[in-house]
Length: 180
Image (cartoon, rainbow, N blue to C red; front, side):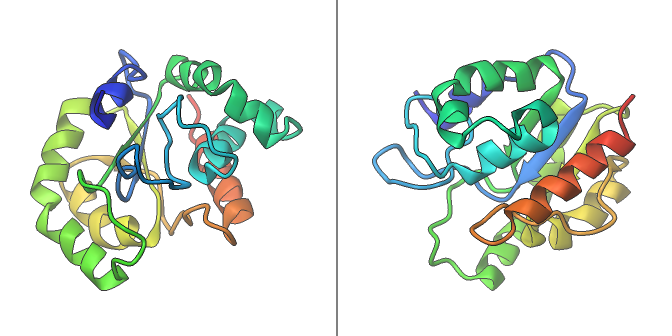
């Protein structure tokens, strides 16, 4: 099953919060710490998943990462039930070696497609949070101009090796200060 089909299993009927990261995980045969909606490719350092769940559900901060991973389907369904959904600005996975300049160029070249995809998911009440500098720097203003409710006024760091705490704090603050 392709990643988009897997993602759609966790799409809420009404998306309250749309998180937009940079690019989807690589194909199953490639090991990666990016595998947000994959439940069968458990990896102990799925940083985007664990840090997003911890930011959205404060009760998970004391749960070991291995437990979150083991119960990933439960947490993804809870994420869905709370009205959260995550997509990526790019539709194709990017290898780690791809430069920031090339990633930004790709996002810029596909902005029209991104705006169209967001229109299919979001409505005027959907709160959108952009994750990672490439996405925020390139897509924030065009999405605002298209009429979307972009919550970020600043970068929400990608929860890589060094930015996990900043990611959780910024994401949690945006969600809590804009909760209906």
